[in-house]
Structures are given as C-alpha cells and as structure tokens.
Image 1: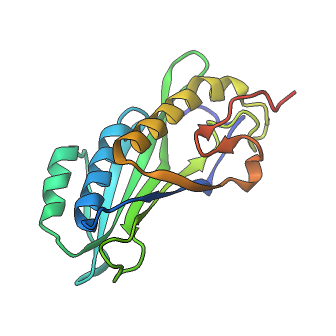
Image 2: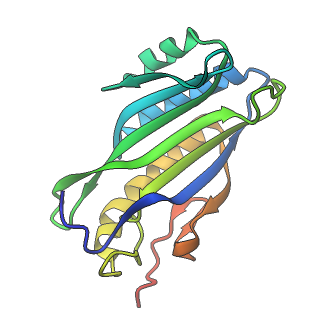
Length: 197
C-alpha cells in the first residue's frame, strides 16, 4: 500500500445514516439491500466478511468470509427467516495519482438492520455506510492535509457507488456524520469543491 501522507485511516470517521422502506416485508428488504450492496461495492472494493444476527441466535451468530456472489448470498439469507441484521466489512480499492491501484484493508463497512429487534413489519430499515478512511476527502487529516489529487481520483467512484445503491434500493440518506470534514461531505457523498485554498 502506498504511504498515507495525505490521508488517514480511523474507525468510523465518515458515516452515512440511511433509511429504507420495508413495504411490510423487512426480511425481503434486508436481503435485497444486502444483495444490492454486494453488487455495487464491487465498483470500489471487495467484501471480506458478512456477519449475520438473528432473533434466535443473537448478534453475529454466523460469519461468511471470502469472495461473495450477491445472488448466492441472497439465497443463503433466505435460510434465516429471523434475521435482524447483516453487517459487511470491505476492503477499498483506490488509485494513486498515477492511476495505480492499491487497497485500504477494512476501509468501509455496511450494515442493514431492523430498527428494533421486534419492530413491526411496516417500520423502515436502518442502514449505514461507514468509511474508516478519508482518502476521498480533499482536505484530509493526513500528515499533509492537501489530498485534492487523490480525492479527485477516487471520490467520484464512491459518489457513483452511493448514488446507484440509493437508486436501486430506494433508500434515503437521513443524515451524515463527518464532523472533522465540514462542508466536504453531504447526503450525495463527497463534495469536491476546493477547500484547500
């Protein structure tokens, strides 16, 4: 991996809090959100683990590792009708300023869950997309804060990933937590104006 002079990794530094209608079928909606996420995340990264929580088994009762086929994962989840949450960890594939690819291990995670374990079926689902890196941000908290070059190479791909995921699931971004990056993150993703000047 390239030296992280202009960006950093840190747990949970940018969080997109989403909501998705379940249309009275929350387990079908959880499976659909999971399948869609796994399909779309391939454009920016690679899923490494999927953890499943259920009413009968509790939190993280099952874990899958390796390469994930979205259709097959959807089928696996059909075997667990009391699913309450799916959690997916991912490595991110990024590019340096020479367009050479490198990987940020564990750079992103996603979860979809019932609002409460015993939520009525008509309640929306909660979803979260969290970045553990600020490589997409123009003014980062790396040793050198000017990260415009890498942000320009990588942020458009993340924004496209988010836009397609929202479109295909019907989910909406309810709020964003990105306190260290004022004006650089909104409900559409990363804002690529020029805050470094």
